[in-house]
Length: 432
Image (cartoon, rainbow, N blue to C red; front, side, top):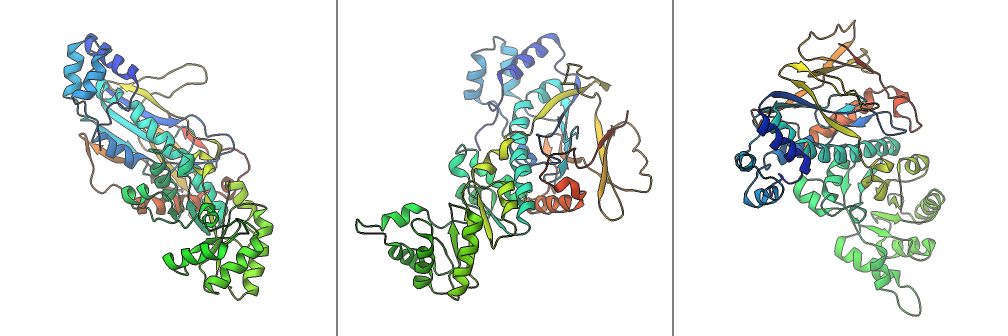
């Protein structure tokens, strides 16, 4: 990985220069990441991106090319020399990837000198805001799909460098596969994909459509377990041709346009009538969690989701902020209207009934005693991520995070899983 040091904003380096100049750079500080509120209509969020952040932190280094950029607006050789030797040496705690979060949840706590911590604001927020937004949208889609296969296929609607991270966040939240091959290579996400309308059109002629030639070529290359796109021309004829070429053991057919519910029923009846009772139906085409929920009663076996997923289904950022909350052991807080922060380093616990249903999140001072559970089961939320600038051993894997999301969704009260707007699924209580 190339240096990540310039994945930042200029004002972080100007603050650094000023702090080095007035002697405040080395004061011990805590910065916290939290969201003041959830996006409209959301009742929970999913933490994603902390694994990528820890990886990016290891490459946050100012080499000569990075220093040349900084020297363009910094006059202080003292600051440039400090950046040349920069290594984060502090500690980071955070909610594990896959954990649910709510308004005010202190999902990341960064501790060290002001100078070394302030530089990480943009890196932390750009990763966490993006990945958490995608994972939160994906989790809602997975819940709506009710156990059916989910394929992420939004690379063509995302920035090329962001697309693999979208795939990772979606897989973390419960999607089964991705069409993005860089995500397969970089993160080990299972890959999936067959063909587009272009391949069928390639085999067309002036006197008519030759789907048979396209289907035959795909099956010869990929086997009868492949999924054929049947709606380029007439969908009824497309299904008939697909089964004629592949036989009743065809793996699947994909519908990418039209009234998906009506067409899915029609295609299911046609497939069954042709003896292809095990051939799966995959639907795609501008799906979001609401469209997926509306198709729940239809004979759909898998969903392919693109644009809505990689744009956070209307909430492309999680709205997280990175705020200074403690200096030299003393709480500090921002009082700006509608942008308030709560001072002091914090811990957080989540209370559950014996049945496993979560009832409350409590945020309390890290220096204080853990609040009484009053008969509820207690789970601490913040876990060590970095100690002395180095990642701790045994950080959760992507597979671990997938399991954590699944467990978390099951633990929410039923009202919290509905797609209708409402209050956060559980309340957050702040203890002074």
